[in-house]
Each structure stands twice: as structure tokens, then as C-alpha cells.
Image 1 (tube, rainbow, N blue to C red):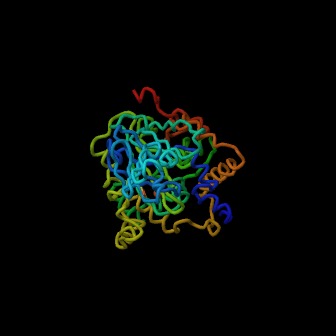
Image 2 (image 1 turned 30 degrees about the vertical axis):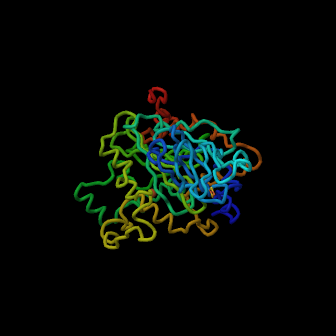
Image 3 (image 1 turned 90 degrees about the vertical axis):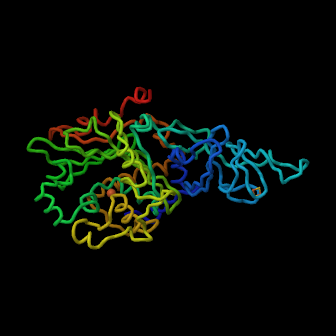
Length: 435
Ligand code: FES
Ligand SMILES: [Fe+2]
């Protein structure tokens, strides 16, 4: 549990809040590249960290991400005309370039024109890995982008997609690192398990996961965040380790489930939970296949609107959502699925959103299986408090720390798991992947 004060500190992300300021030190995924497809395309509404923004690509293809409200009388610039290297407000025609400069003020007579005195907040952006990234922190502290391996891979070897989640970011991150829910929330009923074994139709591809349903967790702090090791028995002498990366402030990388003993050549996936405001979050999902191109079907499955992270509508809003009880099917729940809700992301959203838009952690009762959640809270609370004292979050300026992978492997029981898995946890050779 957290004190009410710490819960406030953890969950408030608006301008001036300590957590919000800490998050603003990091580059964040803002939009999919496809949302701004070309010069003078339609502007896009964007809300991040409680700030309303508008994004557009100008006539030269440059990206602008600006405060959404025209400084004249605060009309939302989403309605603007994107033309001739700027976004023009449709109320009285003031026009802004990608840097937020007011470049035209046609409603004012030339002699009283004060365009040079009017500016909109403009945030730096960058494109990498099919994602438009944003930096909302102090300009003089702008770091390099995080070196995620997936972001350097050729287009056919990576996917990125996103969906809206109607709850606070911390609830969503906590769901992502809480491995103990997987056999329940995403599992089958006992009756279904029996049918699966009888038909030899085991859902889990991996024999170790199927044989040992009580993993032992070990959570270790590392410079870029946390390493979360889940250990299962693998015969008399070995353990099967599944190691999740939790990268500060809001990323995870999930170990692949493959039949092999290690995952050195397996595709893997990950998430980012980017706060829209205190009560809404973008759930990003990434996948990487460093050693081979994905097929068209795999790209559609990992990144498409009706793939594994969907179904979502054209605004990236899930079709199974709070308003329709996630299409909960009680018959399915009685007979085969633990939840009766179809789709892993919908199961996650259902439980996380059901806690309320910003859960009250002073009322919870944590157990041993919540050790990763506890460690993550400690880490980000400390980062927010440290920044208040003037100590910058180190990872924000160490992009190379993000070049890591998750993994799964079998190790002798007496081997230190971090050392034994080190070769699998190292990221790919980014330079060669980029070429
Ligand atoms: S409100 Fe935008 S130009 Fe007047
Ligand atoms: Fe989950």
C-alpha cells in the first residue's frame, strides 16, 4: 500500500507535478508515423501529460507539435488549415510554423500587428522506428533518443501500435510487470485445462511453463530500471528463467514464449504506457524480429487494428471497452475462459480500468507476488523526489541503456541468473541493424 500522499505523487502527471516533471525529462512515443503521412496532411489532436497539443507536418514535411490553443482567443488548432508551411487558425486566420512562431496575423492592421510577440509552445520531435517521439522537458536538457533495438530494425522486422486505456499510467505499468496474474486473468478454467491436456492441445508452447505453475520471482535493480526474473523447475539440476525488462520510466520488454531452451533468435515484444493525463494512458505495443522479416500476416497480427492488440477503431480506441463491459461473455467464463473476456489486452484493460481512473493505493493489501510492483513504485517515486532536489534521472540521458532484450533460458540451478542470461539480455548490434 502507499500513503495517500505517495499515491498523489505517483499518479499526478500534469505540468508542475513532481512526477510529471520527471517524465518530461524522457523522450516519449507520441504518435505513429502513419498519423502524419505527408506534407500538409490533416492535423492531429494529441494530449500528453495533461497538455492539449496539435501535431502536423508542414509543406516541407517538417513535423510540428504545438500547444493546441491559438493564443488569440484559444480556438483549438485541430480545426486549422495546414497550408504553405504553417497551421492557420480558422477563426481569424493567425498562422503558426512548426516552431510555434506566429508568421501571419491577417486580422490585425499592419501598423498594430504584433505577430512577433506571439508564440506557441512547440515541442521537439523525432521519427524513429515508425514512431514520432516527443520531448516535453527543458530545451537545454534535451537528451538523445532511447536506443531500443526495435526502433532501428528495418520496417519488415518491427511493428508498433497503440490503444487508449481509460486509467492512470501507474495502474497500467503495474499490470505490465505483475507476472503473477498471467495464469489467472489470461488463463483458462480448470475444466478447460483438463480438456486441453486430454486432447494434448496444451496452449502454452513451452513445457516448463506448463509443468510448473508456481514460479518464484526475483526482482533486481539495474541502472535502466528493473530485471524481473521468474524461475521454474526444469528437471533436477536446472531452472527455466523468464526475464522481463522494466525500463524506466514506463517501458517493459516481455520474454518470448518458444519451445526452445533459449530465445536468442526469437522475436520479442514490449510496451510503453504513456500518460495522456491523470486518468488516461496510451498503451503502446512494440514487436521486434531481429533475425528475419515478419510475414504480412504477422505484421497484421502484431500491428493491425484487428490484430492481437485490438480490435480498435480509427482513433485507436478499443471496441471492447468499459462502456460495453468489454463484451464479457458469462457462458464463456463458466465453460472455458477465466474471465469470459476475449483478448489478452481487453482482459488487462478490464481489470485495470475497473480499479477506477486513478486507484487509491492506501486501500490495497499487497503480497509476496507484488514484489515487482513495489520495486517499480519505489524506483519512480525516488526519481520524482530526486528531481525535486535537483538530481536528474540518469537513464533519460543514457539512450544506450535501452539497447537490451528480454529473454528466457535454462540455467544450472547454482548459476547466477543475471550472469547466466547476460548474453541473451544484451541488445542487438544497433549499427549493423540500422544499415
Ligand atoms: S482565435 Fe485563432 S485567430 Fe482568432
Ligand atoms: Fe496481462
